[in-house]
Image (cartoon, rainbow, N blue to C red; front, side, top):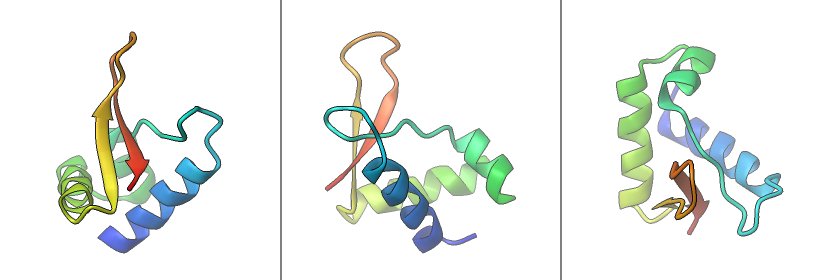
Length: 72
């Protein structure tokens, strides 16, 4: 699995989101399970995508206060 594939998956999930604004919550453990990679690698890819400005990471201000990802 590579960073570009993870971005494609995140982008598709965000576009199909019913939330307003469109966002998704990503469990790195679950993504690692589905994609056959380590959760550390998934977290590293997500951090790189945020650093590159391709994704934006925020925290929900209402419970459950999850970290969410939005398209930049």
